[in-house]
Image (tube, rainbow, N blue to C red):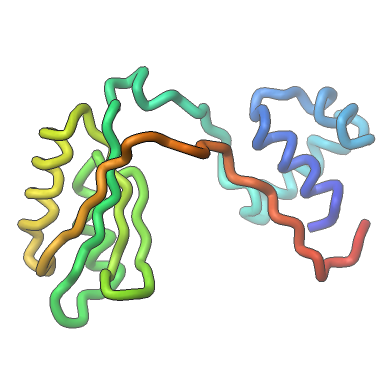
Length: 155
């Protein structure tokens, strides 16, 4: 992936609805050259899709929390993933270092809803305990930044 690919991805992160011509003007390529690069980036899996960013409150999801899961024995990440995927309120999850085995990001309609989700999660057979934090305010809520690989040679 060269600088132009990164610039194209950056333009798509900012506005996935931008035309190839608009992106081309921004990065110094023709619309057809941008299209070829986007097609290649999709084929290689660098671009996995295009989505709309929606304000969660517009969908009624006004409360969010982070929940640490502490699991029994040697519960595998795959087992955790299958179980938590059944909970639509879990919008992201990852295994982590430290005492907890996984960290879940939950969106819900209110605190009572968060409580019910945590109760359902705690009832999973491998969960020993949970630790949760309710978000009071979001300080930064930006789309993912495009990190530059400093060791890569410039294009």
